[in-house]
Length: 404
Image (cartoon, rainbow, N blue to C red; front, side):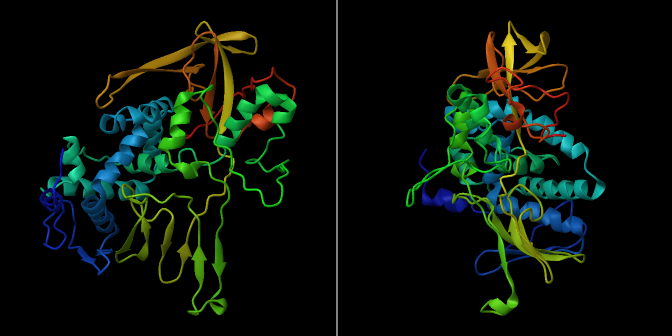
C-alpha cells in the first residue's frame, strides 16, 4: 500500500480543539508548548491520569498497542513470521496470566490510577479521531484497553533485563568446561569475573547463541533489542555547588537503545495534589523511571541484579524426572496467528501440579528443556557443585515467578 502525504496529514489528531469526553469529573487543560510537549492540568488525580491516557493515545496509539501485543504474544498478527517465536515465548511464560494476577493484587490507589488511565485511552478511541496511519497500512483496528494492560506493557519492556542471559551462557558452557568450571563463570551474582583481557582489547559481552537450547530465545535477542544483554551501567548526582547553573543534577541510565519511536515521551502532569515533570511511557500511567517536582527528583539505572532462576529439567516419555521418580507434565495448547502465514499451534508444558514456571521449550521425549523463573531462591552457579549430574540443575521445593 502506498501512503501519500494527504493520508499522513489525515491521520494526525486534532490537538487544538476542545474535546467533550465522558469519564472526566471536571475540566482539564492540555497545553502543548513550542516543542509539542503536553502540559496537563487537572483538579483531581483521576482526571490527571485519564487525561494522560487520552494524550498518550493521541500521540502514540500504535506504539502502545504494538507494545501490548508483544507483551501478550500477539505481535505476529501484525508483524508476521519474524515475531512468531517471540510471541511463542511470551505465551509459554504466561505473561497474560502473570499481569492479571498482579492487577488483582493491587491496592485501591494503584488500581484507580490504572483504571482512569485506560479509560482515557478508550475515550480517545471513542472520540472519532483519526487513527495512526499504521492501522490503514495493516487494515487493522485498535482494540480497547483494560486496567491490567499497562502492567503488560511495562513488564515487556524489561522482561529479560537482568541475570538470565549470563545464566543461559553458563548452561551452554557446561558441556564444554564442566560443572565446577561453569560455576566460576560469574557475572550477575556478585562473584569476581575470572577473566584477563589484554590492554587495549575491546570485548563484547556474550549474547548467548541458544539455537541448541531454544530457538525462541535466540529470536528474542533480536526482537527485544540489543541493549537487553549489554553490560555496564551508571547513575550519578552533582551538587549545586559544582554545577554551572547552581542547581543539582541527577542522571540515570535506563539501558534503552535509540529507537523510533522512543520508549519515553516527555510530559508535565499536575493536579491539586502534585505537580510533576518527567518521562512517561506510552501505555503506562505516571512516570515509571524519570521525574521531578519542585523538591524531589528520581531516576533509574540498570543494576543487572539477579532476578531470574533458570533450570534444566529432564523429560522422558512426556514425564518429568525428579528425585528418581516421574512426574506428569501438565500441558496447554494455544494458537498464535501469523500475518501472511499459517497459524501456529503452540504446546506448552510445565512439570508438577502447578509448582513450576512454564518451560521455555515444551517437553519432547526424551529431552531436556530450560525452565524460567524470576526469583532468586537458587541459581545455576550455586546449584551445580557436584550435587547432580552435569548439565542438570536440582529443583527446590517452591519457586516464585514473575507473577508472584
